Image (cartoon, rainbow, N blue to C red):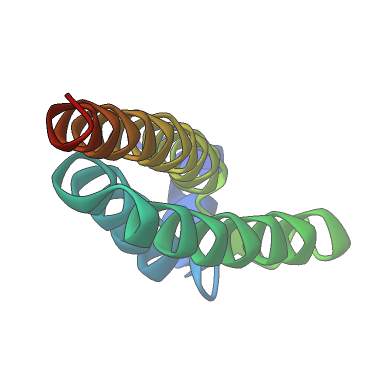
Length: 108
């Protein structure tokens, strides 16, 4: 006695690009923490991929499954993008501080 809705969900194909966009989104989060600027690039790529997968789901609602997966991919991509932007700004400010404090030593 299985639910016909869950059985039909199992027969649907996974949304194309859903899993890949989630992997890229999580990678953008990790790269954003590690390096900053590359996190921006990987976050943007993940966001574009996940929005494309979301659009595919919206265009063909009965053909694919994976709405929660694609929603998670959007969230992780945005988090990676924000981390990349914030850390890149912090790295720039730290670099400017180090340069200005080092230059101040030479002018005394």
